[in-house]
Length: 196
Image 1 (cartoon, rainbow, N blue to C red):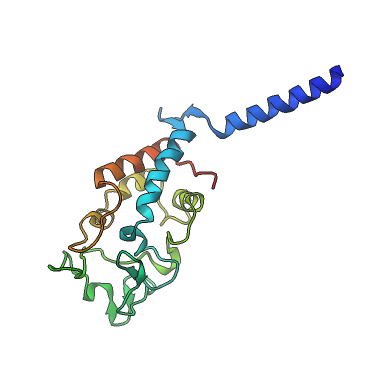
Image 2 (tube, rainbow, N blue to C red; image 1 turned 30 degrees about the vertical axis):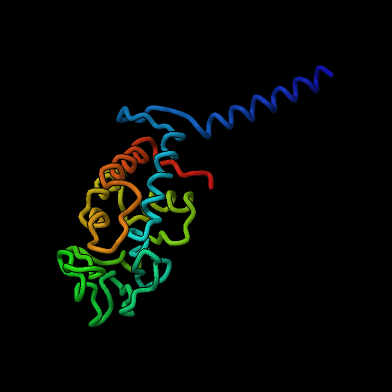
């Protein structure tokens, strides 16, 4: 009986240690607190933005961009192309100028307008929170960005334009400054991925 009690106690202790190692807080070399629980909470807010049409339309599962609040395939039949700027004469910049074209549902603009390139598609569409977080934090899948470059990426004008896409488009579900804050919090607290 005593042996069984000891065995069950060891199993319980091992299980609780495993759980604590999954969700922990620790210091990094640069003094930043890593916190898996707070990091995952922040990512779930980031995920809401990345799944919005303003982000997902340029991060499709296929090679054709999406458009509209309903994420329909782009009506001009354009495709990604090797560098993400379109193919042959059907280039993104033919319609997407450096700034928004005035009017309802007209092409939004940015000097860098394009999809991610074919060799690094950065697909958001259809990804679970876990899959997307792991993809973003993986240097070989995120456009070869390290932690500092990921933090800086949220300030890129092509990211920021999602909050100013012209008339008739629903903006992402939080303000741009709130997005940058939760993006930074997620990465600075460890860049943890949700379990699902």
